[in-house]
Image 1 (cartoon, protein in one colour):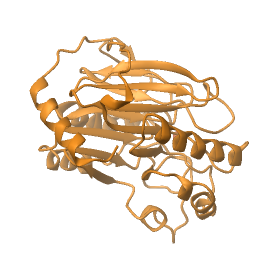
Image 2 (cartoon, protein in one colour):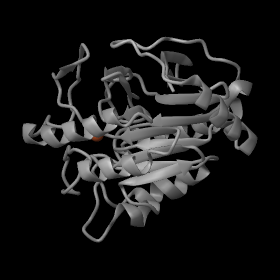
Image 3 (cartoon, protein in one colour):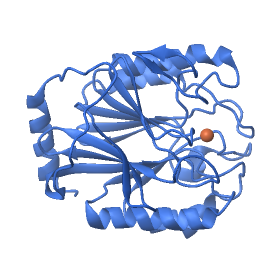
Image 4 (spheres, rainbow, N blue to C red):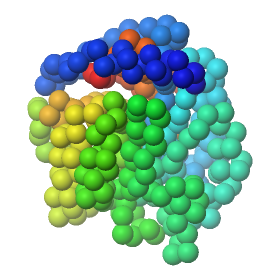
Amino acid sequence: MHTMNRRTFLKGAAAGVGALMLPQTALAVRNLPTAGDIAFRFAVAGDLHYAIGDYTEHAENMVRWFNEEREDRGLDLVFLNGDIVHDVTDRYDELIENYLTRLEMPYYATKGNHDFLEDDQSWEGIWGYPADHVVEEGDMAFVFADTSRHDDRSNHYSAADSVWMEETLAGLAGKEHVFVVLHIAQRMEGVKVDNHIWPRYGVGHQDPARAEEGERVMQSLENAPNVKAVFHGHNHYEAGLYLSKGKPFFFCSRIGHTFGNAIGYRIVEIYGDGTAATYQYDPNSGRMVTNHEIPL
Ligand SMILES: [Fe+2]
């Protein structure tokens, strides 16, 4: 999965595709090509909530599923999209040492509203990078940001830092593809855009005043032509797609906890011919829940 040839081929192929016209309210469903056509493959898993419910079982399953994915169609990166622990500050080391170190691919942690920190703790101190961060992979970049800013020991929904997001995306303008990973959706529930009514628990759910900065983040995401998709967790009942100004925002249900839609995770496959697809997967039933083309 990691050969330079495949990535170079990806860049050349993607450059020839040009802009695809998007329908306003739907993306095409596609059949997946064979594994040999995959240039890069990553997973997004939200809401492990380590420390509540059957959390050791969930962590054990997650590690096994991702290592099996790597064996099967390949897996180059994993994003743990927030609420990695549940309202605790002293379980990160245990989770990392007993479980995450056994992942056979690089992984990154985005901060969620249940990922509490003591005053003398920092995201960077735990994971080795700040909560607002960019991971570059050849001609691609992955951007993730803190959506529970300002109060690290309460269940706090916030916008990402809109200035950081705007400047970061501007700095990545030369990248072919940018994917953004944010625990909490940046649009308030009930807002209708492109015929999509946004679901519960977005920014503004607790305090409508925060929706304004969330919309500034949305504007930055929508205005960056190389942002090809945004990935959210947080809402355990959402595993699907919302379009805004033609840009796809995908949810991924949950990988742990006690309630919500079926446990699962989202896979993204980028193919050597310059196309891409994403699907939500339920590993307990072996069922693909949703499946969409991502226009590159
Ligand atoms: Fe959350």
